[in-house]
Amino acid sequence: MFGLIFFAIILFIIYKYALKKNKKPEGFEDVLFISGLPVAWAYFRQRNYDEIGDLIHKLSGGHDFYFSYIGQFTYVNIASPEYAKILLTQSEDVAPKTEQSPTSNLYKFFGNGLSFSNGDIWRTYRKLATPAFNNALSPEMVGETTLDLISFIQQNLNRPIDVFEIMQRTTIEVLGKLAFGYKFGCLESEEIPHIIKVYKYIISTIVSPFRRVFRWIESNKKFMNAIEKFDEFIFDIIETKRNEIKKNPHKGHDLLTSMLELGEQEGINTDVKQLRDEMVNIFAAGHDTTSMSLSVSLYYLAKYPEMQEKAREEVISVLGNYPNTIPNSDQLKELKYVSAIARESLRIHPPVPMITLRKLKEPVKIGKHILPINTTVIVNAWQIHHNPQYWENPKQYNPERFLNNEKRHPFAWIPFSAGPRNCLGQNFSLMEQKVIISMLLLKYNWTLPDNSINKDKLLLAPQLLLRPVDLKLIFTERIN
Image (cartoon, rainbow, N blue to C red; front, top):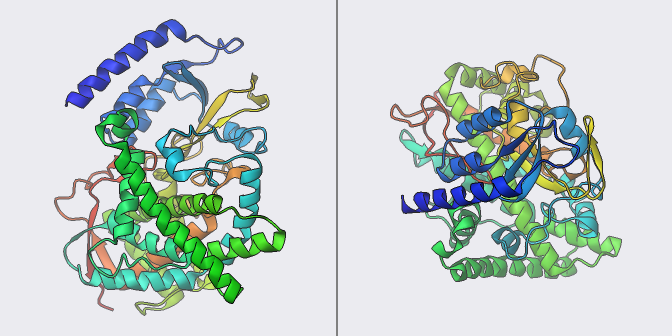
C-alpha cells in the first residue's frame, strides 16, 4: 500500500511537470495528444490487461494514430494495420529498435541479442539464425518433449494444475533442445532445476513494474549475481559446443551448433559474448510467448467443451485414436481447426501487446503526416487485434474466424510482429503449439475448477509479456 501511495505522489509530480513542458510537435496540431500516466497507474495497480486495453482505447478515442506522453518522453502510437504496415516494413536502417541503456536491467541480461540489436550486429546474427531456425522445424523433437509432459500430468491427474507453469516447463525443455541441445529436466519431477530458478528470478526482476522504477527495493547485487550464474551456464554450453564441433562436425541440429558452423563457413567471427546474448534472447522470447499462447488455448478449450470436442474429433480423424501419437509435418498441415485455435489465442491475447519501440533515422510518412527523424513510435498489437473494423466481435473467442476464408488486412494479425524485424521463431512456435495441443487432445479431457478465478474471463497480469493469473485446469484421462 505504501508503495502505491508513494508512486501516486510521483505520478502527480510528473503530471504537473509534464503539463508545463509538453506541447504538441509542430505540424501535428490536429493529432490527439494524451497523457500516458493513467495507463502507467493501471500497470502499477496490476489491473487486468483487458481493462488496460479498454482504458487505452477510451483515452485514444479509438484513433489509429496519436501521441502519448509521460514526463518529457513523447511517442507516437499506431493502432491500425495499414499504419503498422508502413512502419514495420521500413528497412532496419530507417526504423531501428530503440537502443537500451547499458544501465537498464533489460540490457544487463539481454545485451545486444536479436530482439534489441541494430545495424551490422543485427544483420550478421539474423543471417546466422534464419537457416538455423529453418533446420530446427522438427515435430518429432517437440512430440518427444510432449510425451514427457504427459508423464508429468499423469502424476497430477484429477486435481487442479497450474497450466501456465507446466506449459513453461514444457517450452523450456523444447527451447533447451532447440537452442543448444540441452535437457533441463523440468518435467522429470515437481522440483524446478536450480538454473531455471535463477532464470525465473532474473525475468521476474526485469518485468516487475515496481522493481523497474524503485530499484532500491531489492539489492542490485543479487540481480547481477543471478545473471553471472546464468552466464556461466551459457558460456559453458558454448564452449562445449565448440569443442564438440571440432571433434565431430555436423552432428548437432540445435541452433547454437548451426550458428557456429555457418559462422565458420561464412568467415564470420562469432564473438562468444554476442553468442551468449543471442542464446539468451532466443531462449527467453521462445518459451515465454509460446507458453502464454498454449495456456490461452487450453483455457478456452476448457471453457468451451464443444470447441475441445470439435478439435479432438479433427485430431482423431488425422492421427487416429491412439494416445501418445506424435504428428508429422504433413499431418500438422491437415489440423486446420487446431491451427485456428492457436491463431485465435494469439489474436485475442497477444503475448506481446505492444511491439517494441522504434526510433526513426529517416522521416516516414504515416497517413497525411510525415514523422521527423528521432520520432519514437510504437505499434499497439492489442488494439489492432481488437479493432471491430477488422474483427467481428473482437472480444469473443472464435477460432472459426480463421477458417472462413474472410479477407482482411494482412497486418491485422501481428502477434509475431512483421516485416524485416518479425519474430524468427514464428513458424516454430505455431508448429510447437499444434503438436502439444493435438497430443493433449488425444490423451486427456480438461476442465476449469468450479472455484476458478478465471471462470468468467481470463485474468492477465500486465507485464512486458502477458501471463495468466492463477490459471489452473483439471486433466482427466480419456476413455477411448
